[in-house]
Every structure is written in C-alpha cells, then in structure tokens.
Length: 176
Image (cartoon, rainbow, N blue to C red; front, top):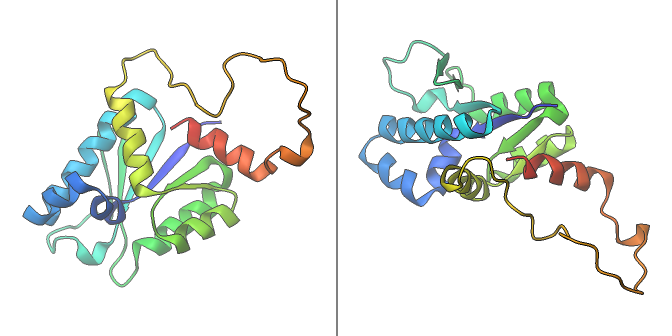
C-alpha cells in the first residue's frame, strides 16, 4: 500500500522557521519554496504528495484550482472554501492510505477518526530534511525498535502492546 501525503500548505509554511521567512518576502515565494522542498522529497521517497492551499489567499490571477509540478499535485480551495475542508474531504476519501501533515488539531483529529495518520508540520519538516540529507540507499534506524534480541526475565505481554490503530499509524509515519 502506497502512501498519499496530504500537506496543509500554509500551515506548514507558517510553522517552519525557514519557509516563514521566505513567505514574509511574498506569499508566492513561500509557496514555491514549499513546493520545491516537496519535489525534492518526492524524488527520494516516491510517495504521492498533494499540497493544499487556501484559494482565498492565492493571487487574483490564479485561474487553475489544481495543477501539477514536479510530480506534486497542488490544490487551491475554491473561493469561500477553506483548505481545511478540502483536506478533510481528501482524508475521508483516502482513509488509511493518507498521511495528513498539519499542526491544526481539528484536521488531525478528523483524519485519525477516518483512519488516516496525522503528523505535525514541524515533525514532517524534520523528516523531510532528514530524507533529503540522508545518503541514498540507507534507511534510518528507529530508536524504539530493538536492533538485536537481548535475553531478559522480564515478561512482556499484550498489556504493554500499543493499540492496533497506534501501531498502524506508526508504520505509516515511519515510511515518511
């Protein structure tokens, strides 16, 4: 099962230290910087990526609500509609395939109710930077996973096991 990463565009830009500085120059420069980062990430990870922006904040000359650049689908909400609504609709459609990138608690809660995984904007930005900086062909080691078996007399049973929903979410976010 391939992942579909759905990014709340302006939320990620405004949560990021580097992208927010670029956005202060102009809104379009911030969007372009985000899209360029996502293109570099997609070339390494090969997940489907969609970035959603509020159409009300887009330039007046913007005609296309949906475009594609470098394999990234760019979606602008319609006039009078928030990007949150578009993201929620996509989370409902994609369900367990989707990973929603937003620090908006309302969006994250809705996505998880629909079976999608949610990750905060700053956490995703760190994963994106790590993927871009990491040499190709290597996978990061998860510190929570044991690398080798260590004998112990301490019993571990189902009472310590995470819920099925949490385990599935962890698997999906680990793939980022």
